[in-house]
Image 1 (cartoon, one colour):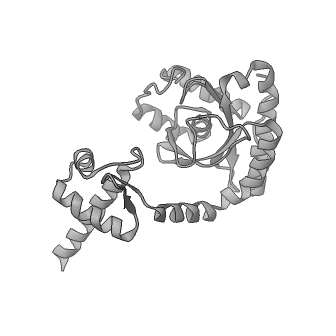
Image 2 (tube, one colour):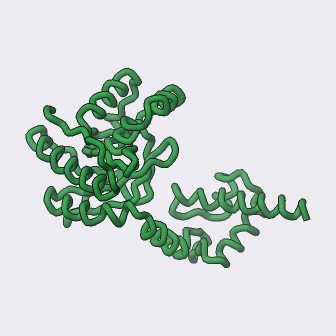
Image 3 (cartoon, one colour):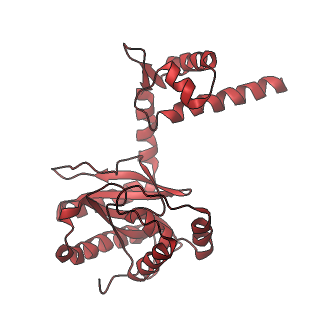
Length: 263
C-alpha cells in the first residue's frame, strides 16, 4: 500500500508538471510535452489521456493539446472567492472610468507578483499585464511597490538572492539604483515605471494595506508610455493613490498611508 501511494503521488506531481507547461505554451503536442518536461513519451501519453478524459486538457484536429474549459470554471471560482477582488472591483471601475487607462489589481506570489484583476478601457491596448500574468518583484510599478513595502529584512533577503535580469528596455538591473527607487516609493507612496515589462508602456501603482497595516496588494494604472506624459502624472498619482487608499480603508486599514507631495 505504501509503494502504491508513492506511485500515485509521483503521478500527480508529474501530471502537474505537464499542466504547468501550458502556462507559457497555448498548444503542445505529445512530443513537445515530453521534450519540455523530460518525462518519457510513453508516460506523457498515459497521463495526457487521463487529463483529457477529466476535462483538464482538450485535443484539436492536429493532435495538439490545450487547457480545457474546466480550468475556466476553476479560474472563475478562484477569482470570485478572493474577497479583496470583490472589495476592490467597484473602486477599480470608478478609477478606470475617470482616467480612461487600464486598471490592475496585483497580489504577491512568492518572489513574483500576479495580476488577479484587470479592467480595460473602451480602446484596449496590448500590455504585458493580463489576469494570471506574473512578474518578478523588482520589475514594473506594481511589483516594485509591493517590494518597497515588504518588511525590510525580507526585502533585503530577496534583493541579496535575486539577479536582476532585463525584461524590456527600461528594466532596472542595478541594485543600488533599485534600492534608491524603493526608498522613494516608500516615502511617496507610489511607484512609476516605463518600459520595464514591455517596451513603450508605462505603469503607475500605489499600495493596498490590510486591517493589520501590512502590504497586501497593489493597484495600478497602465497604458502606452505616450499617455503618461510628465504633466499628467501628478493627477494620475493622486487618483491612483486615492483609489488604493479607499480599498485599504474597506479592508479595515487605519494606518497613515504615504501620499506624494512632490514629484
